[in-house]
Image (cartoon, rainbow, N blue to C red; front, side, top):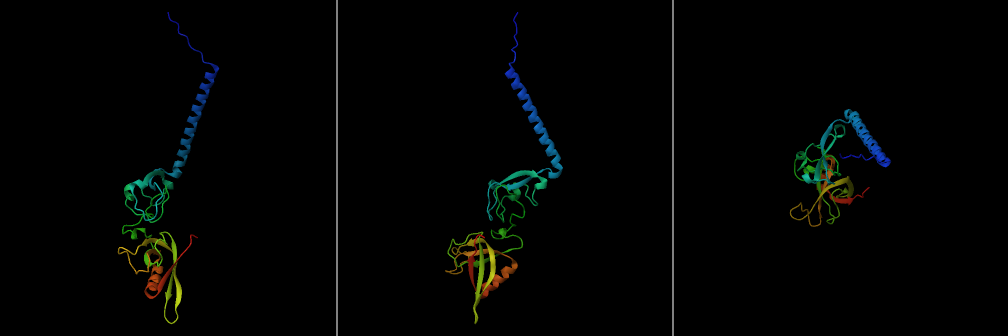
Length: 217
């Protein structure tokens, strides 16, 4: 008859077993506590909802592609108003402002239907084209300029007709892109209010425009 010998556990093995049981119980308690806290916060934070966010930094005027976006799940209380819920709602749209990585894509951040300029113009503003008279490369989109108008006559004078106007885009003078004279330099598309557009139109018709570039401040 064969004898079966049971190996006794050493004190060290027993200590390891006790520690393992204690760690397992602690982990279980932490998880249950975390679940309890989430359950307590759910009425305040709301249920998770899908939100389209930028998967990488995006510049204003960029056309949204599927690779540049992802869908994140956030509590409904923290979902921005007008947030897009699916990639299909965002792909192909043009954003009217810069987006940081992880920032939500909302209906106010994408342009309405229209051409490449109209889709970047925020509601309430207008795009106005002026000759810069500057060498190519002097101004980039996002820069700010002041527009001065010099009027002739018996008493010539110069007046500032636009201050801190943002450059939406820069148009070249070749290829039929608004060629306004050999010395006009690239044309600038400026974001202006309707009132500022009237002042600029008057100055453009009856005066000579001069642009100055504002610093980063």
